[in-house]
Image 1: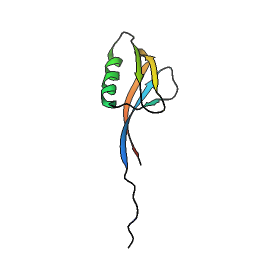
Image 2: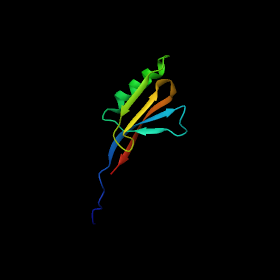
Image 3: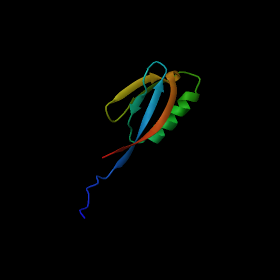
Image 4: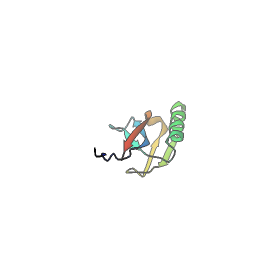
Length: 81
């Protein structure tokens, strides 16, 4: 029986950012998404507004927003070939 070719699947983690002023979530890729996730969670707890500027990897290269506009943040694992 012939062995079928199965491409090796890889997994990458994306940060999904929900902003109050944007209708759709923003999908961002970072070298260390867990660290950025923890930073965003801390910023959500802060009552004072802070200007946040991040340089990402992927389709969105740079983003800037005010911390009080964050309504949610999640990590999402994606599989790709």
